[in-house]
Amino acid sequence: MITFEAVTKRYPDGTVAVDALDLEVPAGKTVVLVGPSGCGKTTTLRMTNRLVEPTAGRITLDGKDIREQNPARLRRGIGYVIQQTGLFPHRTVEDNIATVPVLNGWRRQKARDRARELLTTVGLDPALARRYPYQLSGGQQQRVGVARALAADPPVLLMDEPFSAVDPVVRSSLQEELLSLQRELQKTILFVTHDIEEAIKIGDLVALFRPHGKIAQFDTPERLLGAPADDYVAGFVGFDRGIRRLSFFGSQGLALSTGPVLSADTTVAKAQAAGEPWILVTDGGQPRGWVQADSLGGHPGDTALSQVPAEPFGHTFTVGTDSLRAALDAAVLSPAGQAVGVDDSGQAVGVATFDQLRAAIQAAERTADEDAADNSKERAERAESAPSQPGAQGAQSGAQP
Amino acid sequence: MIWSWIPQNWSLIWQLTWENAKLGVLSALYGLIISVPLGIVAARWRWFYPPTLTVVNVVYAVPSLALWIALIPAFGLTDTTVIIGLTAFSLCVILPNVVAGLRAVPAPVTQAATAMGYGATRRLVLVELPLAGPVIIGALRVGVVSSISLASLGQLIGVSSLGYLFIDGLQRSFPTEIYVGLVCVIVLAVICDLLLVGVRRLLTPWQPHRQVALAQWPGLQHVALRRRAA
Image 1 (tube, one colour):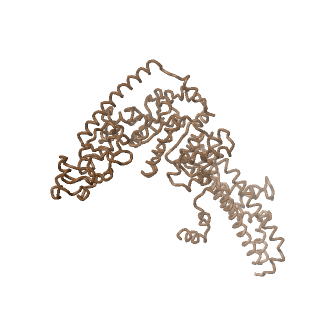
Image 2: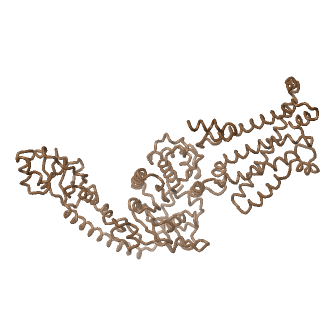
Image 3: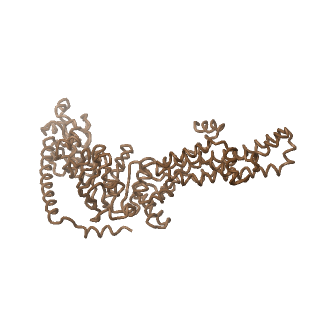
């Protein structure tokens, strides 16, 4: 756990980069610092490994004041990833990754073996081990940067806009991989970005900074979107935050109708009798397309629906797995204004109208608000009962070689 | 041009070339040995650099013969006098490039090194100096070539070098000797330069642009450019 207590950084020219910051990064969680440039987020990150020394206040790592530790030693226990990768151009990929283990006194061969292992962990071919950084693509370099930060298995990772310099497709896959790595490794991560989308995707908690080093809101991504503290936060998260917040709500509670779902061998007469304005025609259970009831009049009653031209259904959502955002998007893109829900094997389960979606969204919001209320009560109680718990946390930090 | 003169005086030519090489190469090496620590200090403490550079430049402005004459009372008509003078001149080429090379190490790289837990000394030795290496070797090439050329003038104060062939050839009105001296100086300079290019290639397998060394050679530029265009 990393704690900032009233931390201020004032530069000699009077600029205040960080202003009396209080922040807690829980062990094993990812906290994202996000805000406009010059808001002090990077300074905050760099104070954590003493690349920048605070003017006032205290930063503790697992209960221990970082000023009491030798800076070089402290840094070897904290992984560091930056946007420009900072890879050593004169060292091979494996030697770059082996940097901290070698500094910690490992034998070179053991450190290189570890490096090759890590290449696989970050999704790179171990055959790249003998290459030099200039021979890699931007995305590959960034992965090597992550591997290098993980090499000595530090409990804490600092990441300063690590994915900002790569193209959107690579960025998205790097984000996904960080998420899956983090599920496995449970590091305490402090992550800086200027991209609110990235913050919402990566963070367990997001600290949104105002200019000049004040936190505007420190909350879960879902609460940041759902309950912005003020106009500044609302403006920063963007005008479509209501829709983006739906990413955090599952579609399992969404009511589905099966009335409009008919198989391709159903006759036109039967379809008209169903009394639905739009019919979803399925073929072996898979959605095939939408047919408007009004258009059926021109066809003889005994024609199978498979003979009637259908309109494309856009995309479907997987019930339970996909979020309400995906379901809503499916409804928006559907000619019938209804979202097609499928199961894991792609079989149509039912369709949802805007009304059904609205009901599900409102129910999900109620649940989220109740959870949030519970959490804040819990947090307040915890703060009262245990002002600090260095003992239990300190044991973890001792694991560093 | 009397070709038969060459084989008849082979051992003289060889000896003078060797002595000239020794003077030139040693001067450039001493220049490097002095420039690296000075450059490290100048790169770290910026105030140190401008006055140092001024001194080095002023020394460079002194004609070599005048500098040697000034050194004669202390060191006599010896190799030492010539080498001290040439070393002082080579500083003017090498020192600014050591500083430039160290300053050109990308900030994210030094920052990452610090954040990995390198102390200042280890970072300097293991990261900054290796990265400044190509620039420093580039400067050393110029330093060696100019030192070899200037070393021939050592003959003016009686220190044996290829300059002997110029002076002797002039006094005897015997151009062959002068041409041979000229060719020897140039060949020597080119060989030393190419050796340094080789050293640089060996030391920097991590550098992306291999043709650059070739392109620095006047006259070969078009070759390198054509190859790059192809």
